[in-house]
Length: 447
Image (cartoon, rainbow, N blue to C red):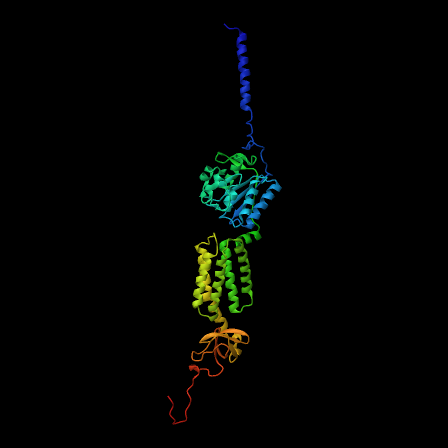
């Protein structure tokens, strides 16, 4: 039989062992730890900023200057990085300027990255050259970059990008630091994973219980100012072309309808804007000359009020000028259709109708010209040009009474914008003016 003290010892052990267990069961559940940054470096704070600047359209002087200014601003403001969101078909700046901008991106004091997006975007020509200088390159799904042309200097490993475009896998095979980020948010995470920026995300658990990363920094988006956007838009190939046609058409409208100057002023502004755009773009002077000559040819027939040979010549010149206007830029079939189609409608139907309406009304006040004497500037046989009181007019005479150069001509009627004239003496009698002569009663009428 065991002594009593044995049982007391067993009871003491049971009591003392159960007490810690009960205390552990009753202890409060510890609070979850705050989300920790995934990057091992010093984490960023909510006051830190990543700049994103959109580069759309051609890399022209406006875009090139804006990119350089954004880099300077990011450096001065202490941004964590600058992301260039690029969707560009090429450049219209000099090779030296383009390579200088590439070096500026490569030597920037803050990381400069390029994301080719959104999905289906292109970065070709000079835009692709700038992308190769980025600290990290992102290519969204369906997007491509490359086709940089023969004028730029490329490292041997980048030669495959000279005359063709590549996707994310081919770019990675060429040794480029590339990420397959389909959206901008994924690209920011890729920048953190690459160590270009401090830890900019925290791990959070969603409603579905799956943990994910969330940025903790500010993302500041930037774009061109309104005035810069206006100049950048004017310097696009379709807009510069259409502005040129619209401007010349409005000026012609003012010349032949005698307005108060609104159409001419608007046309002059359009021509000036087009001049800026054509000056920035790769424009062939032959194309510009052909477009101007086309409107000069149209003006000859608009003055007569009837489309004839010169209208056909103008149409041919218009088509040739359209296709020869740019060297290396594509306008697209819709731009061709709008430009050529609307111009032909204006000069073949619209302007002649306006001219006839304008000068066929009695309010113009040209009745005073009837009976006035003028001088034939060119032979009128049956059509030509006559000068009346210092102004030259299209003129028409009877085929039986031609008027030689320098001979006097009398205005006998006005039809639209054409003066009906006759020689000073010996003019033919219009059959409409003939009247039967009354004969004395009983005298036979001469047949």
